[in-house]
Image 1: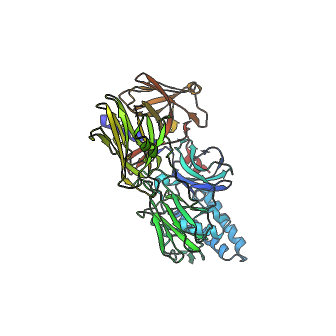
Image 2: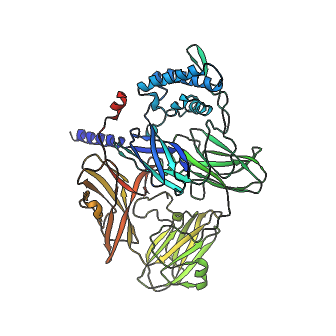
Image 3: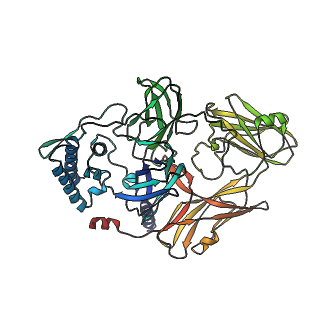
Length: 628
């Protein structure tokens, strides 16, 4: 009986998890300021989407919804082939007196399949209602071209076609896009807004060879599915952003025009868009980029930028001509969510970013450069030192006076601030004896936060054994000297504080309560408990009981209760944590995070801009679709 009850509970939990809507990708994954972009959002349980949340500066309209319906289903093959055949005849014989009749045939076939609630749920097919060369090539590639990945994964099978109108003053960079459905709101996916001209890749776009001819018998006639003339992307002028995706085995190619003397920067955004993949190793799309000369000679390649898996390539053009860039997955995988943005611009001699700047919890401590520290000889704490390690055999040393019994923090930020240097630190007493050392903080308490998977920035919390002059040594375990190998070193007494996170960022209420989990990162030995509360403006709508992370824990899951029915639209949530340690009170807001799984086993909490709550609606959507 106990086993049976456990089985029922496990099955119910799994079913509930499977019904949670999720976005797997957005394609194309970005757009230019002041333009309108049609994008397909692929995912799971999203074909019933009713609304879009995308932030200021972008208007989103749901144009069409796609359910898992494919041409492999026998009842769809025959009408699909007929539609394609008639459309191809129209495109390749534009002056034929039979084209009016062919258009009527296409419309009749579409009407018949619409009545069954099927063909309109397949992406792109209504492009053939007004057939063009572009539409013919698109349908050919998606449904008739020989590809091993025709059947999408279950987690990517449903889709929504959106029309995004991007304001000309919309801020550039990453945006969070969510879909609202009757089953809940999705966690956000990333869409990038840029300022440069953009183009979409033309499939089939394989770098190696054109597709083979394909024929199929239908009604006694031979139907050629490959278009008469496959179009390729025209060479582009710079600057330009190419939007593409890698299907299995793809090596995409992009031509562009360049002149002698141009210093190019070729950059790929891929993991920036989709941080982690649960069912792939290494846990993200790992692009590689290669530059080819007009004569086909390989000039340069890259598959990373320091420790960042999104590659960046710089190259000075030696002669005028049409160059080509190839993009592929470094281990030649591919699927619908391997989307990317490839930017090709002139490198305008960007200034060296030094000292590093980025988000830390260090407050307003005084900072100096390593040159200033060397000039002083012995530095006075507390202090932040901005330095660089410009060769693998360089060791930077800093001296300070310490007192017996004092507790010292040595905290390094480098990789965490996107600097490609893996540092290590040592603390030596006045005899030269090493009393503490650290290579990385991978063993620190708390969950993995954000995109950093190699926690190689060192950290020490050390009690000084005697009074005297101490020396801090910092050196490189590995670094890329081409890409600004800088660091920030904090030397201070403990600044006890905490950061607070809450997950999930989409709290979907199927009843009156929903669980939320709070995650605590204790900084410099913060020792107290943290009480979590809602702001006054939300306390009339929600309540929490026992929302406390005890001094012995770093996590707590509590029930969030809706005191009254929620509106039919998402409600933004906010939380605040209050803790006391060593007599000092600290108050911090909770940052929303989502749990992303990497490579089947690892979990990371990725911060988001906002946390939303939504009351789900029980709705037999499939029955409604059948009644259409």
